[in-house]
Structure formats: structure tokens, C-alpha cells
Amino acid sequence: NAGVTQTPKFRVLKTGQSMTLLCAQDMNHEYMYWYRQDPGMGLRLIHYSVGEGTTAKGEVPDGYNVSRLKKQNFLLGLESAAPSQTSVYFCASSFSGDADTQYFGPGTRLTVL
Amino acid sequence: GNSVTQMEGPVTLSEEAFLTINCTYTATGYPSLFWYVQYPGEGLQLLLKATKADDKGSNKGFEATYRKETTSFHLEKGSVQVSDSAVYFCALAYGQNFVFGPGTRLSVLP
Image (cartoon, rainbow over all chains, first blue to last red; front, side, top):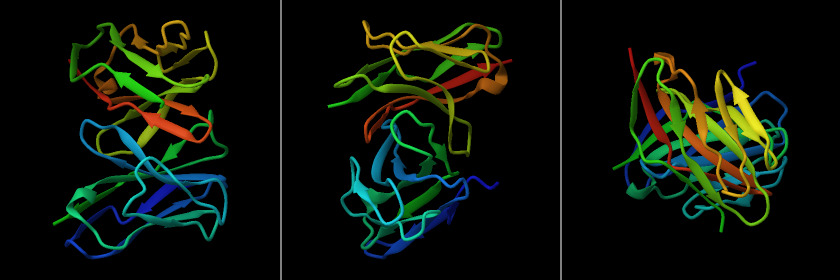
């Protein structure tokens, strides 16, 4: 099992460009999450999904959109990138919510110039 | 709202020293509590968890006890190794609310 994989690993964008980050999991998990990690701030939840076809906002959703068309994939989109979106993005998945363990991908380092 | 506070790092210890990383939380209701560890260049992985008051989570020599009366979940290890060098995150989950602390960087010197 590959677990949780993220594509790409690194990306540099110019302000105003768009991109999509792909997260895939092969553990048949219902729940999937997107976080951003910034120095001194821990991880902050951007969006999450409790099942195929569902999405919900987290703590910092502005400037991002997500889709969960297939159970194993969770896409994070930036329509018009801004320098404030420079961060490391982590995807995670879990079988259920709340007390269940989240399994994390290796991260995507995004720089917006 | 829900929040997690961790001791500021970095923490530098010699091998075989005792480790404590403090974590306190604020939550409505009774959340589940976690410690995650992040090794250099990797994503987070679960170290241990506790889902109700007085529960003790343990793994790889690390322990933490869910203390409702002090709203704390301090991480301890009796004898650290160089391989324990990493960033440690305290986190809580309550319903669909997931909150991570800022992380504490631990460096263990041989």
C-alpha cells in the first residue's frame, strides 16, 4: 500500500496563476483533509470531506476550492494564487472522523512569487 | 473556540535525558487528544492518542495522560535517543473540529 500520496512535491507559481494539488489514498478511507503548515502556526485545516461527493470548509478556506469526485482522490485548487498562499500543504485521510487516526501524505511545498 | 497550546521550542537534550513537552487545551465538550510527530522532510504520523479523561496513550517509550482537571496532555519519555529528533505536535479533535498546536522541535545530541 502506498498510503497517502501527493502530487506535485514542489511547485513555484507567479501571483495570479492557478494550480491543482492532487491527493490520493489507497486505504479506502471515508474522510480526507487538506491542511497548510506555516512556521510557528502548526497545521491549519483548509477543507475536508466526509465522503465521496462531499466537501466542507475548515478554518482557513478562503482562496481555495476542493473536489472529491472519487473516494480515493481529494483535489485542492488555487484559482488565483497569492504570496500569502506560500506554504507547505499536507493531505490526510482517516477511516472516520473525530477520534480516528489521520494518515498524512509527504507534503507539497508551494511558493508563490 | 477550541485551541491547543504547546511549550515553545526548540528543546535540546542529551541522549538518555528525560523529556517533557507540555500541552494544554481549551475545548467545549470532551475532545480526543493526540500527539503527532514529524521527522525531517516527511508528513506527520500519529505517535499516541487518548479519547477520554484519565486515558494514557503510549508508544515507542512515549506516554501522555489525558488530564481533564488540568486540561493537559503532556508528552513524556524517560530516555530519549538521537532518533527521536523531530517536531512534535499536540492536537485535539472534537466532532469535525481539528486543531493542531504550533509544534515543538526536539533535538537530541549524542
